[in-house]
Length: 335
Image 1 (cartoon, rainbow, N blue to C red):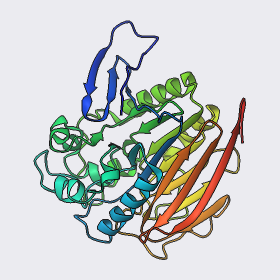
Image 2 (image 1 turned 90 degrees about the horizontal axis):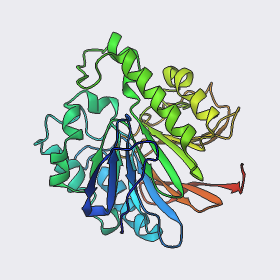
Image 3 (image 1 turned 30 degrees about the horizontal axis):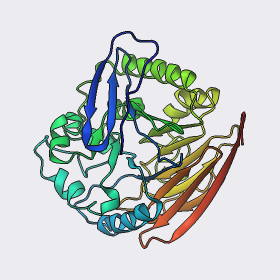
Image 4 (image 1 turned 90 degrees about the vertical axis):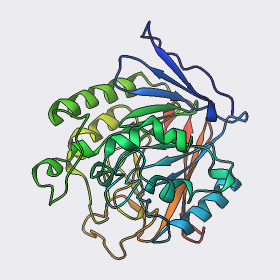
């Protein structure tokens, strides 16, 4: 894959760090979000897989899901993989030398097609361990595919993907931790952290001219699964997505596969949190408005983008297509 520089027209001074293994270019500026350049294929198409809630050292069908990801990844010639968080169970990593990193990641996702860049966000279970460890460059020395940051942007030419750290939004993690200990280093004041994050995501989305705008977070905005809607994201993040013509919000957290269409905007809510342990029969049936698909077993999602079309597919643990959906975008409007 050939890499290229990513310019920030508003900043005169920047620090460029090349991550050569996958042809990426990271541009760090004074803004909160780091930006990464992910070149599209020469034919202009973009393909990637989305996986969440997975790291269990191969247990709960994690290895079986990984096998099918490899098969589908080869078929679609994917460019990268997106992880929606809860990367390591039950309580994240203990440190940057924790063997669970290799046992749950490097030794599981071994297919040739999955030897691409992995873009990951933190989930609430990751915050219950040493959250800083997952952000450490040391992990990239162990496995150069790994890239996990709190919030960042991937410019994939056809699409811009905005990764948002959603765990600090959830008030109950601070007020009623239910016996868990969270690693809030790097967060400081939650109120200030969230305010700055909202300001940055507003600015980034407003300035984006990408054909497709995708936001990725761990927590659901809309879901009929165990956790349901995340009220803090409904009130604080969803209005920003609507105001800036975001096409897709992708998340994990609920251990299921799910597609919900927003009833008030074109936004599609896509849950891919079935990378290992699933929750059979745990459904909030009273909230089914806009529901297109729900599956309470293990699996993952694929995304294929062109200038005019987006195709999403959900797969089960055997690689069967459970749900396929296509969106068409005209030259100056979205459908």
